[in-house]
Length: 430
Image (cartoon, rainbow, N blue to C red):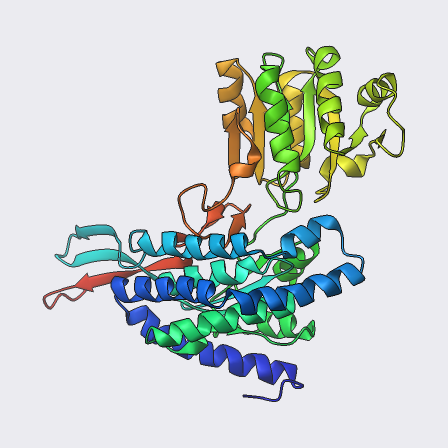
């Protein structure tokens, strides 16, 4: 291994070894790859104490550094969360083989037999921040699809990510594949990310997962093709036909069930037709969960009528609040003049992640589902369902907010490409 002090050489050697490891994976059968993923799942269970010990060190350091509660929640591992990671891998192993699918088969005019089949990408790089569970998700999806991976976790989660990667690499080796198929960069030096992004021709695709700064850096600087995952400024729009008994539980779930996730609700739009009746109810419900409200003028007036403390319980919203991902017990609230304004507001300030309408008017729901530009659009349900596991995809590698190749929760199929297999009998082109 290259000297870890020489960052470009270290990352280059790590990536070349991972690329080499991708070849036997690409040739492996469905049963062999699925068995490897199951071995990875069991290894997480068997060695969970190692992972939890590493995570405890990361959590202590993060608390000392004053890390926000939202990021601490993303960083935290528990026995239940490790079991969830293992179960996600097992679900992934049970899915139909994403490799070798026949996507097209026909005979062209000259008599050539043409088949288009799905194949692995090769070497997948993943750059992510304070979510150690991504280590298991990314590695599992890559092995299941016949790809090797090189992982770059965030400094705040470094001990956790390295511990998980070592457990999974050992499992991959036990299953008969090169352990380099699950590789992780073991330095927190930011130069390592730059070195990884320069490896065009070795790394086949780069997937960033984290805050806007990380994602935009990768999009701007990477020489390697990027699948862009996005931040989640997710909205819920309460239509004038909404059933309040549905709306309030949906909003509370979407905002408070886990605040540090990209599919949490960050902005609430209320139709002016129900604002007078609905705002006092929803504000009271949000305050029961200690949610800080950033409100427009009408929302702030209601907060004052409820004798809430300005600054501590609510504050006037600024322009920045409409596009902000809080990742905290905070929400922006705006009263809108009907469905058209709600859709226009979401399409302007949303991040094409997850958006929802609460309405009993079926036509309004269908219009919202059609016209809102996002990867996942809901009618009468919480945005918290945007997740690979919830969608039946098993472990996911991220939520893509772009429009090419992958969109929404993406897992196994998104880490394949295709090639044409052409079988002839001596044909030459005239």
